[in-house]
Length: 219
Image (cartoon, rainbow, N blue to C red; front, top):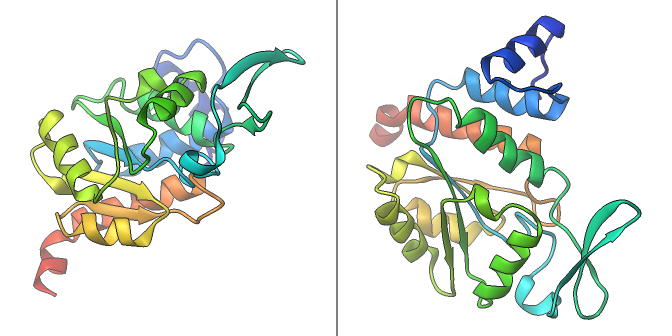
C-alpha cells in the first residue's frame, strides 16, 4: 500500500488536482501509486461478476431492482429483497481513477467494462443505480469469448495497441484468452473482488511488463 507521508503530501495532492475537500487515505494510496508509474495504461477494463460485485448477475439477482433511502443512505434490493452492492473499494477506485488520476493527465485515458453476462440491460441498470455509469467510456456486455470484447473496446476507443490495456478479471481462462492479444491481465481473487491492494498490484504488473517488454519477448 501507498500512503502520503505527512500533511504536506496530502496538501500537495489536493492542490495539484484542485480538490476542494480533504483527500482520503484510500484516494491517496491510488493517486500516489499512479504517479509512481513510468508506464500507465491508456485503458483499464473490468469484468463484472466477482470483480466489481460479489455475485453472478445472471443467476443470483432477480429484477425488478429498487433503490431506497434507508437510515440516511441509499440501498439497492432485488425482487427477493436481496441487498445488492459492489465490493467495498470499487466505488472509490473508479471515482479516483477517473476524477483524480485521469483528469489532469496529458493523455486521454479510459475505463471500460467487459462482461459475459447475458443480461446486459440489468447490468447497466445496476451500474447506474450504483452511481458508476458515467465513469465508464465503453460497455461490452454479452456472452462469448472476451477476445471479441477486447477487440470492440480497442476499435471503439481507438486505442493504438492491445498492450495499452490493463484488464482485471477473476476468471483465469478469460485472462489467458485475452492476453494472447497482447494486453496485460490481472486476476483478482474470486469472492474478494477488486480492492485497492489488487488495483495497485495490477498497475505495478502493467508497469513492469511495459518496462521489460523487449526482454520478455526475447524470453
